[in-house]
Structures are given as C-alpha cells and as structure tokens.
Length: 154
Image (cartoon, rainbow, N blue to C red; front, side):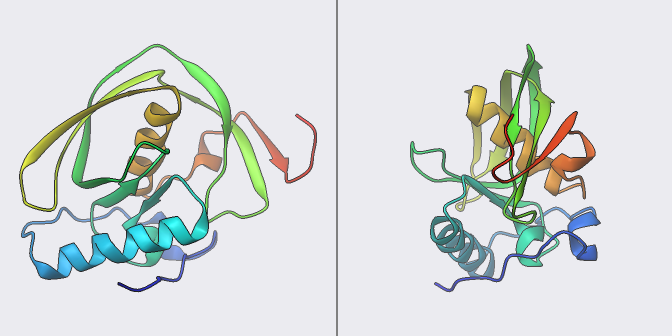
C-alpha cells in the first residue's frame, strides 16, 4: 500500500468525468488499498479516485462504521432533504452548506466484482452524493448555498 497525493482545487483532473472500471484486477485492488490508506492518513470520510489522479469510477468511504469500497457506484434512490456543512480533502481550508438527499440507496461492485447495495441516511447519504459527484467532475462548491473559510462562524 502507498499514500497517494491528493489533488487540490484547480487541478483539471478534478473536473473530468471518470470512466467505468471494466475489469477488476490486482491493479484495481491496489488502487483501493492505496485510496483507503490515503483516506485514513488524511482524516477524511471519503475519497474518490480522481482526487488522487485516477480517472476511474472508484470510491472509498468510512464514516466510522468500517470501510466501503465502491466500484462503479450508482445512486438508485433518494429521499428527503438535508442541508449541512461539507468539506473536501481537495479544497482545504473551506467548507460550505450543501443541500443533499437525507436518504440514498446506492449500488456498486466490491473488490471481488460482486454487486453490493448500500443504504444511508444523514452523513452517509451525504458522503455517497459527495463522492459520486467527484466521479462526474462535480465539486461540492458547485452546489453550496453558502461558503465558509476555516474558523469562520456559521
């Protein structure tokens, strides 16, 4: 496993639409391992492959309940509305209020190529949306209703 460099706002790779993973092999599993290590080292809750310069539809998320590895994730159902602060490892020093669904159902492939379905509310629903947006070149700042600098009062 290896730590990957997290790209910052302004890097054109963050604005590209990622291609689906068509074959899950040792390289994809190594990317998942590296992304997990990078996520844990950074203290974030989610990381998408374009944030480490890989234009593939791969995401890792851990909101404190264990690592989720998502290959070709697709949101299949949403419900409700929440608006809360989001930050991003690629946009340090800032956060913003972003409206998101309060419930999200997502399907993806795991590292063994098996289809998995996850359901999440609140923070997990937000993470699903935030990270899958990355795969389409969308950053939370594109959807934020208000932005804040670190230390600024909400």
